Figure 1: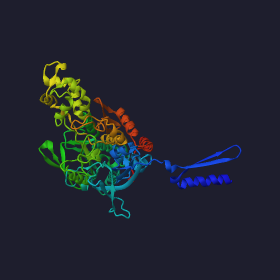
Figure 2: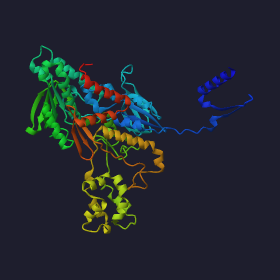
Figure 3: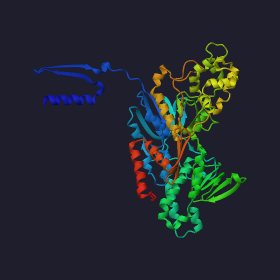
Figure 4: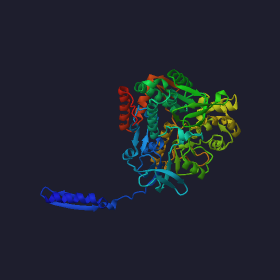
Length: 577
């Protein structure tokens, strides 16, 4: 017992004082004798390098993707966001109609953080100001309990990751903010769901005229992009598969109208998908009005300017309106842009490594930022000088080919230009500029090189504001941070054409994996890489499988699949709760 008590006290001592741990070796001989020896472990401790503090603003696609993929223990991370969860936004339209429950598409940030080896602190607050010069951000708690929403605090940082997304853009249309629903957050989807049920309950009251019932049951959706189209399709299915059975007396009074200022809905998709979607909506009884620009919204009417009819103003009575068009800049981002000389832009300008232009340690991802891809023609003299290794004043095909990998990596529009013009390599491009000359004998001076590359920059395009882009940017930046020290010593990026050496990292490259547009009736349009278009029921199951697999955790995957199964068996939930 004495021996047991000794080990018990020894164990407790180690647990209570781990910083003063002694290494104890107890050797017992078969004769019962013993030898006790110890040494102070503190004497062999390696000094811990001070951790760099990374502050992440936002828990959307970009911020969460960065957090999930960061695994370098040299960083201390603080996440600041007004919501303490990540929301799988592609399924928001499904939440509005009860196909999927709100809790099934959210993952608490703390669940993600506790699985990390990196130190992560979360603060539920919103950033109100960025002081890049002093590396500070000013935050305000959005918890109203005893703080009244006015509790402010300051956070210092070594690196700042801005991933706050964007606001809805109302284009300053009168009455939109006061009278329309938006579909950006989980709370928006829940509010829409309650309003849809309210409209049916109000229209079912006996003391209303039929005209008033028609107005209440007229659902107007502004914006013919993926969100507006998917919501219109989800609402149509909800009404025709579930609500008309519960409200048989008013089923013929329901109307859904989709308003789009452009010539077609889903204009960013292949024309085949656009045509199929418009035809299907027409068959389903969804009124698609293209060329209708909303100019005013009151509590009961929407005023539109009919661009196809000489600008005629029409009014449409409605019961519920959902605004799903355009994205705008958040106020504190506008202030920050003015502070760093980007006041004239609609989003933060970054370089190809996602660094905010003019700020060394500030990065911006997702909808709040746009990559300012450098033009070939801006650096043509520097490119010529680097490629002309013998300083002859002319470039041969061989010389340019040797620098080709670095040029294409730094300026991806060159590779895209060659591909779109069906040129096998740079020799074809140089030959086109030089004329009918054998490839091996081509030599160009700088003016001829300018002529050869003059149209390359026309291939530059801005990346779309989608979850897919934001997620890939977050993953890319996390990998850069994971290898920061290694790449400082051994840079892996392209040549610095305007300087010496190489860039630390390869620039960000977006890889398009395709896009989906659910059209209702268990039919989905899919546009995948390689110009492959699929429309119909098979694409719907592909959509199910992709969106189930893309959930953050097995918990949310199980919940989403359970919701889909419940809907197939029992129908959608039509309660107001």
